[in-house]
Amino acid sequence: MIRPPYLQKGDTVAIVSPAKKIAPEEIEIAIDFLEQHGLTVLLGPNVFNSWNRFSGSDSERTNDFQWALDSNHVKAIFCARGGYGSVRIIDQINFESLNKQPKWIVGYSDITVFHSHINSNYSVMTIHGPMPLNIINRPEELSSANQLITILFGERQQIDFDSHALNQLGKASGKLVGGNLSVLSDLIGTNSDVVTEGSILFIEDLCEENYKLDRMLFHLQKSQKFANLKGMLIGGFTDMTDLSN
Image (cartoon, rainbow, N blue to C red; front, side):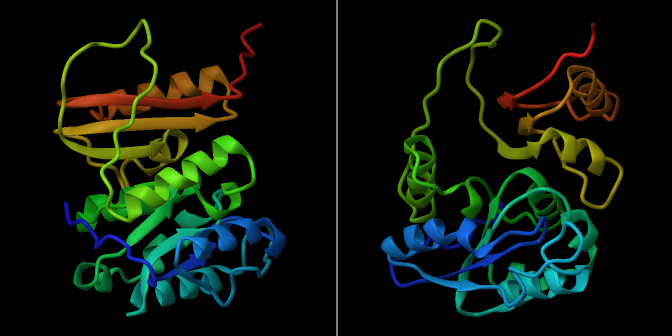
């Protein structure tokens, strides 16, 4: 995997919104946070546009991402929020400049489309991490944002978390891939499909029904996504619902 250069104080970063629409006040804290860490923040020209549920038309969102990708000044791209919409534009974006000038792309949820597409087709590292919408004045959110900054600036980060009774103990190393389970399941069989063989697979999701979770996991299994894994990380599965009764 190709690792983009770590950030330094004085670097320029961009915020774009390839999925759901967002309002200016929703990312004010994030902009201040990034600037306080010595970064110059540029906004995509169409970041606050609105077209149906999206942050502008498909062409506007494509143009914003392409602008950030091709800019010689932008060292990292923060996706403002998730939702839905990335899959509508992923094939319209030319990623050739990413091979010549790798840069960090940050986001989660629907932004898993970008992670999977880029990791599988261009072997460039990306970060499944907090988005500007999530950087708010709550201790747990600011803690995640500070961890993100630490990683982006190249400081080694040890991540510890509580064990679970179902964990399989052992050591594993490999390429870390994955993201939002619903998105990964939908991408199977496409040119953005995640490559899991010999990798450590990470999955997470939010607000899904248990039977849908079960169906998606079987979809991955039948698609050989669990075959020859080096390991598996189960992230947060929050606000899940059980309608079996």
